[in-house]
Length: 173
Image 1 (spheres, rainbow, N blue to C red):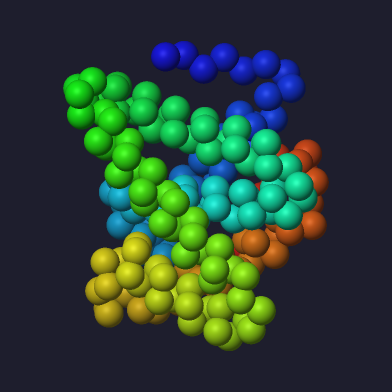
Image 2 (image 1 turned 120 degrees about the vertical axis):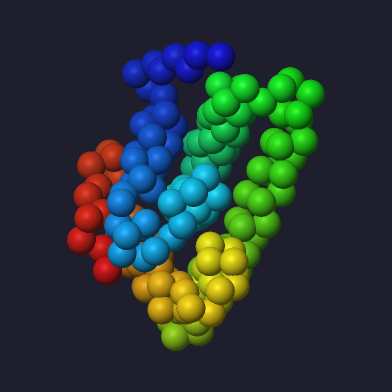
């Protein structure tokens, strides 16, 4: 499967912007997210879910759905490129879907929390559980990742799509 991009396919641009943001080495060095397929997937989902929240808030559900569809197509293609057999793909994609929708629901609830201290604590618990496999030695990393998440959401909250494509997230703390 080959993805063809047309000039007006902003969902490609936004998706690949999020992919590039999630590949920032700081997540794996500074925040100590495991540099594994699962760790990278967690960071990708984090950014995608925040972007989707913004798009829904901006009443761009169709765009957000196109981005989600592209993510699933990209993951399916990755499995196939890794040599996963056609009979195993549906099971793997079902698991990916369950993880995505589970994380989406959890993060949506947490990010909707108005009390900033409570939000930081809930995010810290979320990251400790999902990103760091409930390893208490990563509590500080989980808390730092929660601060980053709040800052990232704040950064993209008031930008339009063109500005989003030009974002530099290097300095987010």
